Image (cartoon, rainbow, N blue to C red):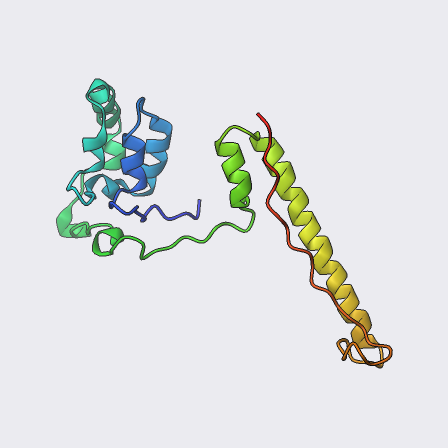
Length: 184
């Protein structure tokens, strides 16, 4: 929820193109996409291929059955005179990469994602490491804020020339380095 499906990759493929381009259909995913915007079925990629053209021939009968069972849900009869013509999805008029999507605030760092994708770290282990890293960052930020608050309460400025007597030197938090390689 809250995620736009009006996105495409370098080749103009949408999430529905990817959902159709699978060895075995996952109709739960297709349902989620089509319930959000059934017009995505009509978006063609840079080769002129619609999502349905990515379906493997071996799966055509499953897809025919799936679409037939849901035609009333996704394409109910419409009175164009009353509701007007349905326009194309917004994405049709935009070039690729014009709608960047920011990483969620709780996204895992890329080094953890690589370890999970390569099978060297389980998803739960990665979540625990990510949470520990976030906690460390939060603790460092709180400690820095506390140091700054104490310095602001003192008579002397928080940062002075280190040669002066009684200066307070604030250090920045240590960088978080990449995780060491895990042995398989």
